[in-house]
Image: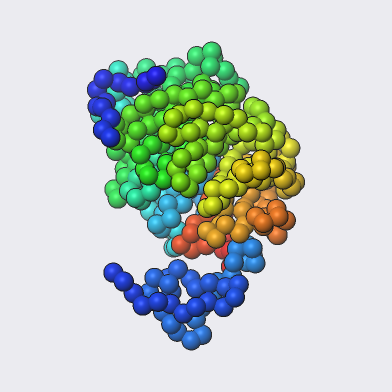
Length: 380
């Protein structure tokens, strides 16, 4: 069934360098050295993430109240400042300097939504990037302005009557919002399929998953999920998506070819998800239980470890040997070894750390602090 498709939105249509020196056992060359084919002696080495250590590098402040942070992998980090600041702030991941503050104020009629006159504001929650590095997609908890009712709420059902919201597209070249897509009520996590064809959005209050076609430039499908869908992970092959159902104890697997669904038990209250590069294991925070779970998709075996009170978001290192978790009430970041979920390190962070991102180019971990700051940790 095609849902949310507006007539004015259009239709779907479908140098070489010399080789770097061989690293020593248990070590790697930096990406810069690999790219440049450097063969200096001694070459600079990097530790695997399960042997490196987190160390606070800098705390960033200003007019922010970040709900989440997201790394483009190409030198940018975006912080989504939700309804309190009505903005997305953009940072250079190397210099840690702010590049721009993007207001969430838009004119929806410019994007084909003629029913909304004047300007509207959003409330940025989460962000994801297109595989080609051209765009960021940002979900908005609620919309504000003419044609929109009261803001959404975390205590809701599909019959609560909250308005549908929008996902913005931000051009990473101009750092401006250049499109918008209508989705469900109170959208939270957003992700992009590896081929860049679809943007998937977990709608908290309508209990469903919006599927946006990037070719059509609109939502083309809504898939029922269950009570409070949130985290999303897509398999590296792009054949399946997994959605955490925070009001239950399971994930919903979505076949991205047939759009059929099935459920997989994982533990009570799954919130955030990451999938490893092999596509075999999914890592999830179990918010109420204070645990991180690892699900083996072949055997369906679930392993858990306690990390702190109310673990929220998580991120995975570029070599997939460690994952990082923010513990909201504990005010800490936990680093775990993926092979056995052993806690390698727990560091004090900030009051209410809520979002986390791993920046591959710099091997830094960015932590969004709901109280109004961002902490950046080196992991070397």
